[in-house]
Length: 174
Image (tube, rainbow, N blue to C red; front, side, top):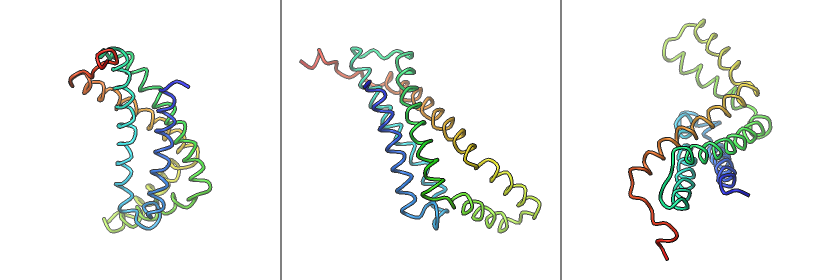
């Protein structure tokens, strides 16, 4: 199996474990005020994995990492990872925590009430939130979001790797 696909599988699995840890800590059930921020930390997982993969690719190419090679590697990792996390989230929403959307809507409703929102504003938000967070919407947006994040991280990491001193190649290490 190509190392790019292994990195993608590892990224998707690690993101799935992250979600389970958030769930077990109550960030998706009883501590939604923490959960609204904890998800941002999950971006460190694909960032670290893509960095590692691109650094490995750079080393294998004698220190030269073209933008095309980087984009190809990062995109493949992002697609595989997005497929894994999307499938996991379908299982998560259907079986592990089927009430998370209702809990999120209620938590947001309470925030809107405290902020002085009108009943019409609260109703519109609730309807829109439920419409966007059905199983199909979650799958599509999750896949697009995870892929987009992977591509954006790839471009940023590629820029960083081009600015950093090039790693020693395998032939230079011997």
